[in-house]
Length: 103
Image (cartoon, rainbow, N blue to C red):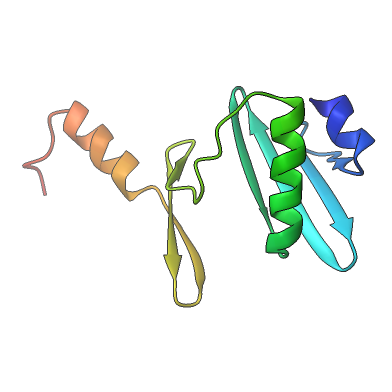
C-alpha cells in the first residue's frame, strides 16, 4: 500500500510509518493505516472522494463513511470541529475491573 500511496503523490511521514500526507492545490489530505484499518481525512471533500475511488480500484475495502471509533478513540462532530474522546474506553476498563460502583 505504501508504494501505491507514494506513486499517487502521498508523502510518507518521517515520524510515523503509518501516516501519509498529500498536499494538492492548497488541500491537505491525511491517511493513517493501522493493520487493516484506514483513516482518511482532509480539507477537500471532492479530492477525498477521488482518492477513495482510486483506493477502491487498487485495494478491496469498504468505505464506512464518517468514523465513530478508531483505535478505541471515539470521534464526534462538534460545533467547533471534531471531538476526540477516550471516555467509552475508560468506562470499559472500569467495568472490566469491577469498579463501576466506586467513587
